[in-house]
Length: 445
Ligand code: FES
Ligand SMILES: [Fe+2]
Image (tube, rainbow, N blue to C red; front, side, top):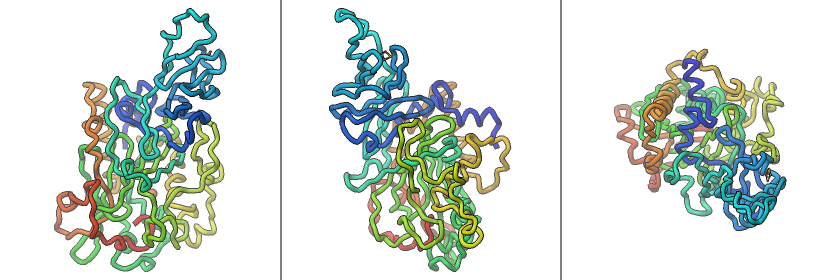
């Protein structure tokens, strides 16, 4: 559990809040490049870290991110005319470039120099592998982008996806580092004999209460959840939390799996989940594909509604709180633990059901919450260090600390899990000999 004060400290992300200040030290994924598909396309409303912004791509292809309220008298730049070199407010015609400079002020006499003294709030943007990154921080020269492997894969081999989640970022993220729920929320209705023998799937279903070890790292935290595999081996699920809001889940084979999940706070009560990964290959036959024979337990992005221009109209699932996530009670009685379709929606329903910001002073944490406890400590420490001494975490300025991978591995019972997995946890390394069929047939293993 957390004190109410610490819960506030961790969950509030607006300008001037301690956690908001910490997140503003880093580049943040603001939107997908595909949301600005062509030069001169319509601007997009973006909520980010509690700020209301407008993203646009100029006629020359540059991406800009401006505060939505025009600095003149507050009209929304969402309605702006997107021109070759900037966005023009339609109220009095003032035009701003991607750096926030006022480059035209046609409502003033031609001799006026006032435009040189007006600036719109503008944030630097960079695009890499389908993600528009933004820097909302205090430095004149932003730090480097993090070396997140799936965001640096060669052209044609990566994919990105986004899904809105209607709850606080930390609640959503904590679901991702809580491997204890796998055997219940997602796989609770699947009996052990449904799994291929001698695979991660079988080990996962045979023992649904694994033990945990947790380590603090340069980038955040790492856990190893272990349970028996063979007579003298353990199946380890190794996963990461990376500052300030990323996870790498333990699904798949360590050394092969390359996925980053970003839980980007739009504001205190809305989060944009952005997944970066390798482009799926079809017909792999493993549990990492998007289809499976197991009722309701599919991986991959849930069906989405068409995007709207609303502040919260982007990447909304068809199943959502207004329709109880399309729960099917008959399926829940007979063949699905939740009656809710798809692993993503099961996580989404359950984390949103906790309310917009869960009251952590009322929790009863158990031994399966060790990773969550340690991750909160690391976050609180980083927030407090920044506040009291101005110190930023190593991960702000050293992008190489993000060069890690997560996944499952079978190790001898007496092995030191951290030492034994050092090479397999390194990103940007080929491991051609790995047996990918060891995951077996159950999604999430
Ligand atoms: S409010 Fe934007 S130009 Fe006047
Ligand atoms: Fe989950």
